[in-house]
Length: 357
Figure 1 (cartoon, rainbow, N blue to C red):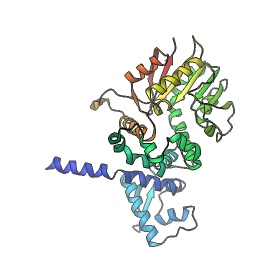
Figure 2: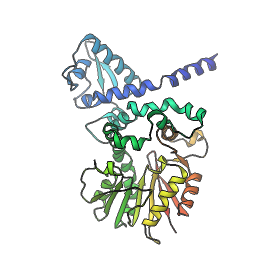
Figure 3: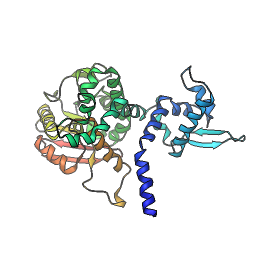
Figure 4: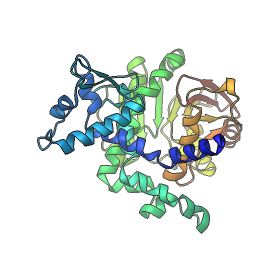
């Protein structure tokens, strides 16, 4: 019966796992982490409410009960800490996790939490079974919205903003692991194009650490239109399926996982044309899935997250996916890169250096 009950309990946890996402979203929207982190120590619910920036919020019993139950859930997940003062009042404090919910500080995952839990982003998840049953080639995102995510973002300003900010917040998170591991290599480049570089945050981090590099941020027109000015970075609008600007090297982060094998080959071939024959290379920042389930002593903290990302690609892209090393090898060879090297870093993705020689 222990196994039966354990199985039942785990299914219940999976069934209601969305509750954790919604509690996180609520905390980010109310800036609860920012409020608690701004204080000298743990604070009471009344202090949290008093600092929520909305004049319509009061300390009514209903409001306090809502917030208390949400905080109880977040404390149980160790997002925040709890202790009691001499009068028995509950006080909430920070934890090693709560810093990732900050909206007024970086690095933070708060924009990504808001983007992934946006109603438009949640809708495709309800169509996964339809994709299997219908067998019509229409993706979950298209079934939910009538078009793909990039098309919808190009006409929906709110989604475009959330999408760009969600991806931009990963700049500090991932680039903080990439730059120390790759500093010497960037030092040898005169020019670098970031293909699908969004609003240019990744490239700016590179150029700021290596000011001699001429940076070209390359993305679709509606993305470039919202890109801020960065010293050392030129924004260029275009379509990577048509051509890629020339440079000593190409940087392409979390782009290829959005596309099918055939589409990736087309992108890579355009990258191949844009770099020098003998000295050029493409620096790919992507997840490398393990070929099989990791052994108990071979698990890193992001193993489960990488598998979750593959599911996200299925829900939010046309034919996107995360790939194993074998799949990367096949893809790169067909794209004109017979040699590659994978470097693991303390982050979700790895660095994949692809060479055309």
